[in-house]
Image (cartoon, rainbow, N blue to C red; front, side, top):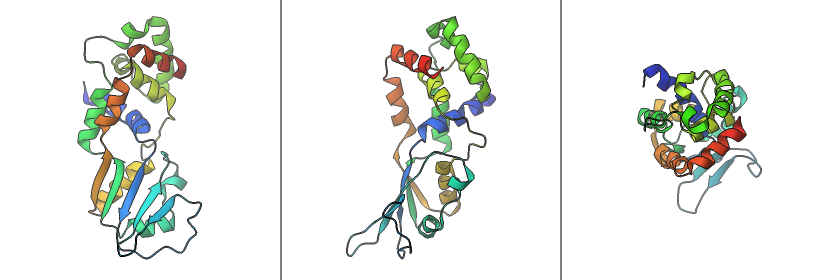
Length: 201
């Protein structure tokens, strides 16, 4: 696969795989002066131990979402380590790019038949994905690509937090791997994958 094709696939992968990210912030901090009873930032504490924090995110590149609220930034910056749902490193991105593709010599048009394939090609063209790439994608990969909002920058909150953590030399851990998440899609019968794609189109 050409490098250009890999790049065209990465953004839809992130849009699916990183849909709901939770991370723990481990540090010795003072409690932020805010009411968190109905918020997305939670403190986990136990007498005699340093507190941890749990922050719920949505998968969005909206500026108001990506710009962390002050209470979150106050606990994020001093922390030593961060746990994300997934590690978004180069190895993970390369694996996700290839895992979306059929490598058995078949094409998506073979699996779908031309009527449904043409509908999928027309729908996915607006995502900037060439038909050459689409025709190699697994049905589930095309379905989830069409089922998620198109991204403009790809700088979703989850990725921004990961990049910030690396820039601040924090230890970064993943609760799961991309391989574990994608394997769930691959265990679906292909007929069910086709149904998902038909519904997405």
